[in-house]
Length: 374
Ligand SMILES: C=CC1=C(C)c2cc3[nH]c(cc4nc(cc5[nH]c(cc1n2)c(C)c5CCC(=O)O)C(CCC(=O)O)=C4C)c(C)c3C=C
Ligand SMILES: [Fe+2]
Image (cartoon, rainbow, N blue to C red):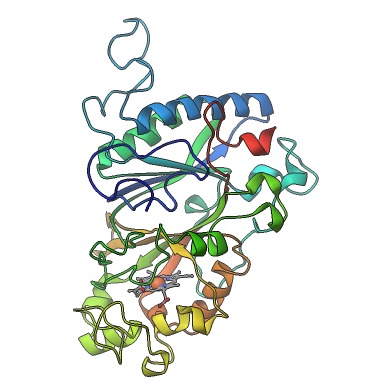
């Protein structure tokens, strides 16, 4: 796989693909969605160039500019709370939402004609209860690191640099990665206590990445060649209900055993899934490629717990992140299937949503979004 799978070191910032997609999953997430608050295309481009310079510094473990040695009369360039911390495998992944390309007769930044066909407005799915203030956005940044302070510092400083050009619309902290892109590691567990990420696309399976994750110029939008489409869903999990549910019912929901993580009808976690042995409405049977014409996605989600909800219930769940080549045939196909009959729907609800076109990797001397804006 690309980059180290543990340790405090840096993950390369420049390359053919953005880091944070196929690179090994870190422990922590700070995901931010921004609205662009100016109509000035040149200002937006200038900010993306400055974000790029900052991204290169921060992912290498350096402050962006001066944190404590600058002019006493000015606020420091860098806010400083990551001084002395290692890079912690920080990755920053940028994406562009549908609204950036304009709607109706408006073409805010002169890119309307370049909106890629896969960057759809997601349809309403049965059971969705989406909050506007946790959905959408013009630009997203996924910051992942093994230290939450490093991920939060990165988003905070990008927001600071972007003042006057972008404003945070919503953001989400995550912990306890729920999927692995390195199958040699132990599979992490989600808030339901189940191993999550067993059958994910591994970050070193280049054939599968080319087929299911990396967009291609052949798909229509040349500027997205080597990029990927990100779908994010804030999925609330009804923990208290789940915790009163029998072990058998919990296992029936997934069609996998809670301890080992093996599928019904097979002894080991990574054994092929004997689909006919799983309940017809189980999550794994419904999400499996063989139930969906071969469709696969790269999952890279995190658990979240944002305290309690004021009614004594944990405000917890899964911040689901999936990367794919075309959401129309991948996420939408799967979510239509799951929303209709997944047994898990008794215990979860989708409350936030976003879709973003993540451009290809940055070349040295280039900038985030260069292929879109030039
Ligand atoms: C639209 C896609 C998916 C959503 C939304 C989703 C939500 C979700 N999933 C879990 C827990 C598990 N999911 C597992 C497997 C799995 N899930 C999806 C897709 C979505 N999940 C896929 C494609 C797969 C793999 C299917 C396969 O090929 O077998 C598993 C089993 C372990 C694993 O393989 O990862 C668990 C557990 C939760 C809790 C959740 C929303 C809260
Ligand atoms: Fe799942």
